[in-house]
Image (cartoon, rainbow, N blue to C red; front, side):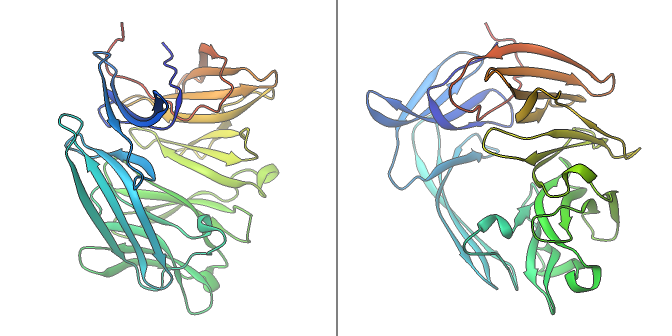
Length: 314
């Protein structure tokens, strides 16, 4: 079943039972919380201070971004509003990330990265080094650097993005040898003691592409990565981290739009855009390497969310 929402900025909760989205209701911006199991909708007026929906908290509150301040050599300060859908109560959360030598380009925020683990006590980020831009794994609770990749010595810099395994035991990210070129996808254990090269060059024919997304499979055997081509989409691949085999998930007549792993299974659900403009929702059994088309989607706007609910919808 495909659900269509006339809105943008859509976020699925970790239990995959509720969707929060911003949409127009009666000509006014509204924060809508939709229960996928019961079909119930809760509507709350959208506040001007809210910039976007960023996720859900563990206690089922909608997390909205209010402000983000980046300061070079210092780090980031993030302010969030937490809305409780059960009663509409809103509280404020302020996160201050102390990141020594933090680096980013003001004209291109994607050129500098911070990626936190699920508990918020570990961060992988870009930092000014002695002779270049280094990559650092930092223990936020103690203020100690557990690992540092010195750009000048290694000849590579942090190309981002980064993705943490669900249990927080390791993180995968990209190291770029030159601006705009991706040379390696690597993984690093959370203690900073074990760096593994997952690819030496993701794909020789795509070395000028930027890795736009990285997603671990639930058990960590596979790593999905998507490459940025243009606003329409780009190619997507699955890397077997045990064998280093890389296989493309799209056929020559389609480009990838969105992808997500089905919780607890080695199944990749993804949306592709065909050359005729139609979009297909596909489900790939990675172990058997068998893809099925679940539905054809005729949307004028890009698909912003792909998710799998734990219940059978009516």
